[in-house]
Image: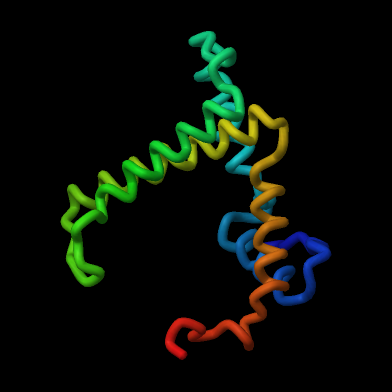
Length: 140
């Protein structure tokens, strides 16, 4: 498989990480590609229902919070070591999807590429939390 050399501008370690993702996803994959496809699908869903007038950043931020609360509710009153069954995991999966959909809606409403924003944020986190300083941070 050929791998495209990608200059992330984020250092050698992050560049290797991005290249590894491209190797797994296939030679034509570029970071953010799948998110862009989903963004178009979500935009089409909203447009065909004439919901764009309701999809303003304030409303979307509220929706993200509501959906995140619904995800959190699935963990309420459970111990950290509680086991989940298949039905629980499906609920977690769908609530997580709701949060992600609204995150993509926010990117659409604010006219930015969420994949690019995620790539940039990962780079910021790599610099802010170097692995050698951050390993087992919460075990100290």
